[in-house]
Image 1 (cartoon, rainbow, N blue to C red):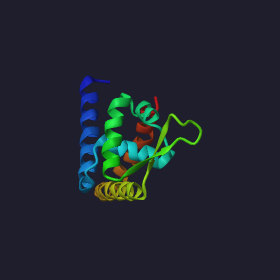
Image 2: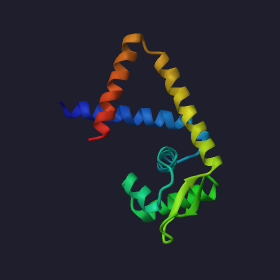
Image 3: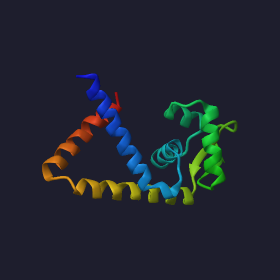
Image 4: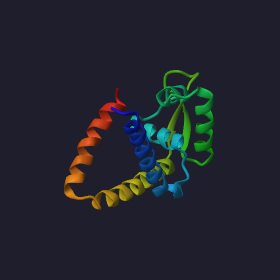
Length: 138
């Protein structure tokens, strides 16, 4: 494994992420905001501290992200059902709709891009996806 291979792979991932974000740019979500909304959509309610840990951020930074999402009506804060000191963050109906629309825009762009590859390249890409997922879970 050469350092240049790692650099090229890193650049390729970065370019792909930027292109997918551009496809959903009309939603004006930062990478962190998008990640938080995805986590809430998949995992349900969470506290600011839980979201910060999951995203590898300081709670204060996550608080800023949560405030921005709240200001746009994409999330809401509800009392924790068992701990009155904590507040759960949940997606609003508007937040779920924005998340779905952004995800659909990314998926549409990616599907169109993949359709331009030949069959063998598509199979290689999908096989690589499983490896990339394993890497991300290490």
